[in-house]
Image (cartoon, rainbow, N blue to C red):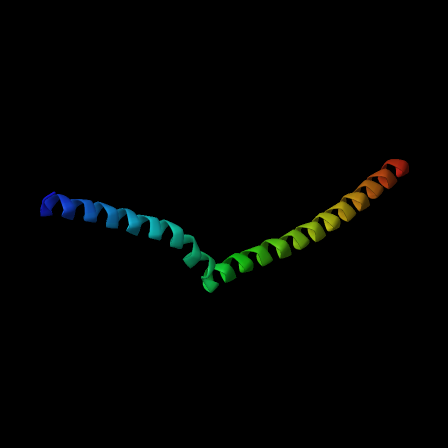
Length: 79
């Protein structure tokens, strides 16, 4: 084997090793990123608080609908 063939083989092997290392370590960088985790947690907290606010609003709407129904029945009785 001549030097050119050995150089090409070494270049291909080193390229494969580099790609394998990048693939194995790219997820570790994201997992260790505190800002990324904080952003997700902040979004989850916002969603959870929105769910509580929506359920409170639904309860208020149901109360108003009940009151309207009672008033409508009272008006029908008066007629």
